[in-house]
Amino acid sequence: MDTTPQYECAEFRVPMCYDDVCKSNNTIDVFVKRVVATATFDGQKEKALWVLQGGPGASSTGVEGLMNTMYLQLEREVSVYTFDHRGTGRSARLVCQAAQAGGLGSPGGLAIRLDELPACMDDIRFQIDNQTAAFSVTSAAKDLAAIINYELSDQDVYVYGLSYGTYMVERLMHFTPASVRGFAVDGIVSESGESVESRATFSNWDRDVGIVGDRFLAACMVDEFCKSKFSGVTDLVAFVHELYDKLDAAVADGKSGINACADALAKNGKKPSYLLRSAFGEYLMSDHMRIAIPAVIYRASRCTDQDADALSYFVDKLRQTEEDDESGNSEPETLLFDSDMLYYLIVFSEMWEYPTPDKATLVSWYENSTMASDNYLSLPYYCLFTGSREHACQELIHLPVARPLVYERDQYWNKTTELPDGVTALLMTGGMDLQTRRMYGELEYKMMAGERMLVSFDDAGHCTTFTTPTNGGGVTCGVRILTSYVKENGELKNVNTSCMDDLKPITFSDKAVGGQEVFGKGDLYENSETNGQG
Image (cartoon, rainbow, N blue to C red; front, side):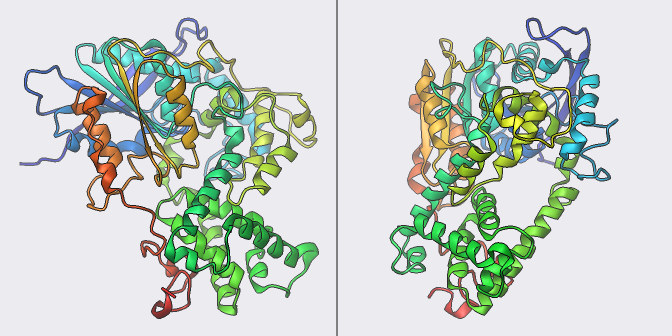
């Protein structure tokens, strides 16, 4: 007998514009996927768990594996649902078909170039009947509410969101369907804050990455193996900044031959500090690759001829990864289902600071960080999408002319709601999460009224259901806690968090990533396996 979980798909026809959101008689179809419970809890109502993807602009394909894991952990006794939130995947995906931007044959490949944006924005506006608010966070949350009310009104429903999905779930809390018994948010985008410095915004991105990057380097200095690689160093953050300055100076004004490692790092035309800072920002997002960050620092500092060769390989590997991303070779589902245009629409409408920090400020946040994500490059996109004439945009004199593509912030923006009676919330955060810093989860917990529980993992990266391995193996601790929350009917006092006593710590001597993968050599730190622990 085949015991493979059997998935079902459907489309729900919903209004393009809900009342009080926008005005249009058009409809769109929203794609929903589920695996139905084949067993039941004795004497209890049927249960359903929603698993919601992030982005914004990412489809549900990225959480299909997690859906399957949750279904099996819940012993097939809970139906598990997901959907492509409107504007992504199979739910009226916002893509520039007429403008032919963001495709394999377009000038920028998968990335939409600035000069492609004006036509692309006009294309999207035509597709959505000029109703930009139809693709707002509120509209997506109202889709979810409508589907729950129609399909699951007689079940106990739990809604789990990760990353941007937390922001959508938090919006749903403002008009919670009657059948919802609990919410879980993981990798949390906070809804509100007294100041822009404390509120989760995408304009703060590089500053956030830098703070988590420094926390990661501090963890290196309390790890015996990692600390041994930096003899005499007491402040690794300061050491890295000094290294950046040294490498940049060696290739300034076209110089070469002063520092072989600086030459290797600069061979693609980037300043060494910029290349390393951005590469580390990428590596830090991966539990697998982040272990290699100290090794890159170590080799760039020691800089033997073999280290220079290793760093040259490292640079080539980064460039190949960039080219694969641009061509869609790395993740085909990104090409087929995600929407950059929805990302820009939502981020610049309600998840970016206004007025925006200017280029000098964004660049300073980038340069003051040991690790970052090139967020200053988003400023021209903000200016085009918003049509803003604020000072920061007037400074950008070479922008193409475009009609704005944003929606107005609605009555739910910058507000944290109160949980209804009988509804609880589970909040999960990671101390090494650079995409949604732990402080934003703590802020959401503080601002939220009602019965809620905060679980924080010091070493976890983004989204704890993926980044909390245990020494005993098996599913992550985050998955176990979420499973317990649903099994215990949202009763927070009964949630089993015992797996937190068995969490696998960051281990810098871990061989999960090898020198061959990063440097084309057998060991991360040395040039042969035999002395790799030295």
